[in-house]
Structure formats: C-alpha cells, structure tokens
Image (cartoon, rainbow, N blue to C red; front, side, top):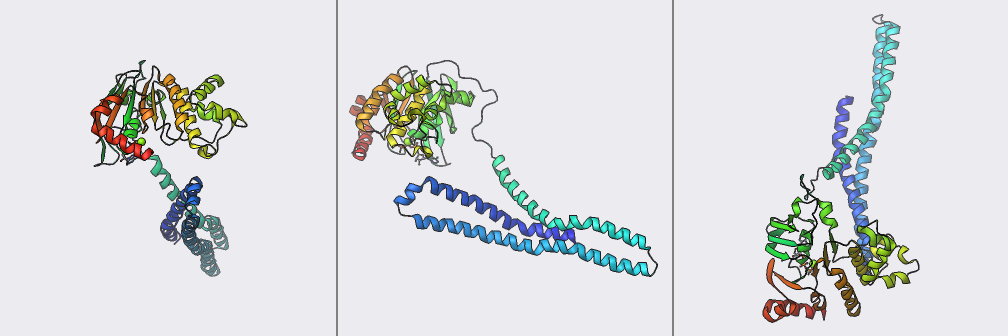
Length: 408
Ligand SMILES: Nc1ncnc2c1ncn2[C@@H]1O[C@H](COP(=O)(O)OP(=O)(O)OP(=O)(O)O)[C@@H](O)[C@H]1O
Ligand SMILES: [Mg+2]
C-alpha cells in the first residue's frame, strides 16, 4: 500500500512542481527586465501594466504552489497514519494469536519491535517523495541547459594565429540567422593588411553581421573567412578574438570602475597605457573631472554616463587591446560633430598600421577609410574610394542620401 501510494503521490506532484519552477523562472525574468528597463517603463507610463504582469506571474506561482500544498496536506499525513494502522493490526491479530497460544508473547513483542523500526522511515516517506519530485524537476531543467551544445566549437587541431599584418578575406560567404532568410549571399571582400575599409549600406543590410562573423560569434553557412591566410575555423577562438577589438553599436559597460572597464581586454595594462587609450578616445577629460577619476564606478551598464561618454570608454577599451584588427560599428554615433572630429583625428593615429573596419552612417567617418564598400542585397555591390563611389554609383548616393535625410 505504501509503495502504491508513494507512486501515486509522485506522479500527481509532477505537473504542479514543474509549473512552480517554470513560474519562478518567469518571475526572475520579469523582475530583471523591469529593473534593466526601468527608464523605458517610466517613460511610456507603463508602471501599472508591468505591475499587473508581475502580479499575474506571482498569482500563477501561488496557484501552482497551493496545488502542491493541497497534495502534500492529503498525502503526507496519510504516510504518518498508515504505520499506525499496521501497528494496530499486528497488535490485534498478534494479541489474538498469543491469547490462543498460537504464538508466544515474546514473538509478538518481537514483531512489534520490528514494526516500530519501520514506522519512522514510512512516516518520512511523504516528505521524501515531495522533495524527490522537486529534485527530479530541477535536475531536468539543469540538464536542459547542460546538454545544450555550443554552436561554435574550436577545432581539435586549432592553431594559434601566426604573426601578420591583419589581412582579411571573405570568400563567397553565405549567412542566415534563420533558415530561409539569408542576410549575406556570396559575400566576398578582401581587406589588405593595415588598410581601412568603411562598410556602407542601408539599415539592416548586414553590416554588423559581417563584423560578427569575423570573430566567429556566428558560423558562416558557406564560404571561407580568413585572417592572415588562416581560416578562422582553424584558429584557437581565444587567440582569434584577442586579435580583434570591436566597438559595438550598443555600448556595454560593467558596473565596475572606469579603469577596469577600459582594461577589460588587457588586465595587465598599467595606468599609463590606460590613460593613453582614454586620451586617444577623448575620454580622459571627462574621466579626470569625475570626483574619483579612473576609480569612479559606473552604474549598472554604465547608466551614470551619457551615451557619448559610454562610447568613448568603449573606444578606449578597444584601443588598449592594440588589436590586429579594429572594428568600429557605429562607434561615434552618440557624440557631437566637434567631438567626433577630434576622435577621428585620434582614430587616424590608432588606425595607423592596423586593419580597420568602420561601419558608419556618417559621411565624415566614412571618409576616414581608404576604401568604401557598398553592401547591398547581402553582397558587396561596389568598392572604391568615397569620391569614386559618389561619382559612379547611384545606389551609393541613394543610401547616403537616405541617411543624410535621416541624420538631418
Ligand atoms: N540575432 C539576430 N537574429 C535574427 N536576425 C537578425 C539578428 N541580428 C540581425 N538580424 C537581421 O539580419 C539583418 C542584418 O542585420 P545587421 O545588424 O547586420 O544590419 P546592419 O546593416 O548592421 O544595420 P544597421 O545599419 O541598422 O546597424 C537584419 O535584417 C536583421 O533583422
Ligand atoms: Mg548594424
């Protein structure tokens, strides 16, 4: 009976326990999103809706939790109660046998003693089943994460990146984030060592995607990408990525000191190197004006800084890496024209002898590059200098025209 009951209890608990765990995960993500997006919630006056969303999740957890509690209040006392019935039955039937001399009193006492030993384990079975079920559900969730295969894996024979000047080649690269929706189609591009190339194209044409493929954040579906002649799939991931510094479109900073944020890619950098990088990125002035200078802690995701200040820290972080390849993805979109002009002159110094890919919507930044590449329809549509393309390509004018309008 005990075995049958345990089995039933275990089965009935499963859906409710799984629902509670699922609910807790949902709760965590709602809370996290609301903390991170607090400004947005307030700006759009959606506090009430978000509170309602939170209540809905917690109410669901409450309901599922109550179902677990109801099951427990039924089954757990049953497990407490059952051994008592057993004892009663042994005492009654055994007493009868003893009275009629079919059994000695000693045997009866012995049987009762044995039964007594069983009482406690059976009584605690209910709790064990309940926590066992929770463990099974939790383990399944952990297992789901653990068995996830990383989509980018280092080849077993991966080599370190040999010395070189940073020649980059994309050869017939196809890529799609989701099957059937290609972003890059037969994308072919050669960048000579130390050269600088500006990727220009309409919004959503795949410029950032090109930048993400080089450090192998995603794997190309077809074709070959190489750096200094070595296929990036044959290189040690860490080695490949250490040689490429990227300033992303959306600047991310850790809630740490400014110093540590700049030195993120090179922990061994000394103060002089950090300050030099900050100066080149035109971040030194505002950092020194801060009460604690380089030891100032930037708030969560750098929220205590302006957009332009954050971008300049990200540029300093990339400069400090002294990478072979520097990728600037809309790196100066949040700084004003004068500041951009200053950063550009500094970038010229940084770009010297380094392969640089610049992605920008601004004419002034594009003109920094030796070569301009027009990306259209997932491939390289035109290549040339800015003036050549301006003269030759209607599409280039169109893209720039659109953007000039958008920028104002
Ligand atoms: N993680 C992703 N998952 C699915 N689709 C994506 C992802 N990132 C980008 N895309 C899609 O791929 C296309 C190219 O995006 P990409 O970010 O490369 O454009 P972009 O040229 O950098 O645009 P922008 O100038 O606005 O930065 C877009 O249509 C976009 O919707
Ligand atoms: Mg982009």
